Amino acid sequence: MDKRIIGRQETADLPTFGLMNKTVKIDSGAYTSSIDIVNVRLENDLLFVLFEKGKEEVLFKKYKVKRVKSSNGIIQERYVIKGTIRLGDIDYNTPFSLTDRSGMRYPILLGRKLLNKHFLIDTSKKNLLQNTGDVS
Image 1 (tube, rainbow, N blue to C red):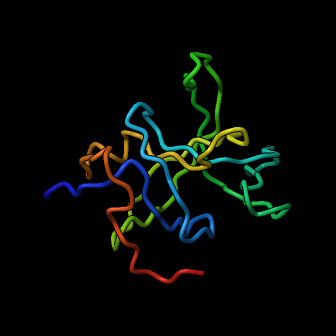
Image 2: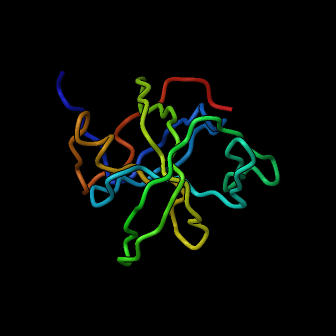
């Protein structure tokens, strides 16, 4: 399969999280994709609040805990869940680490684990893919 060209930022749907038409940053320096969350807690299942869902909690039964080195070099333990992201007209299943990105410009980063298999990045461009799915 040929790799698709994407820009340094794209618009994506994340149906697993109920998010549509969201700007995502392409981050070839990150291994795993990540998404901004708050109030994460474990009660038999993993519960957390997404960056823009207010107080509505998201529940995941399947998750892992992994050690991740952040961009400032600090190693953190993070919950990692699998989710679907739609870029253009194709859905991809990929892991997302859950972290507080409230001080960052982009709440969603796409890392190499997704990018390496499917995309080439043109850092001089933005929004090269167009989602054809429903936008809510």
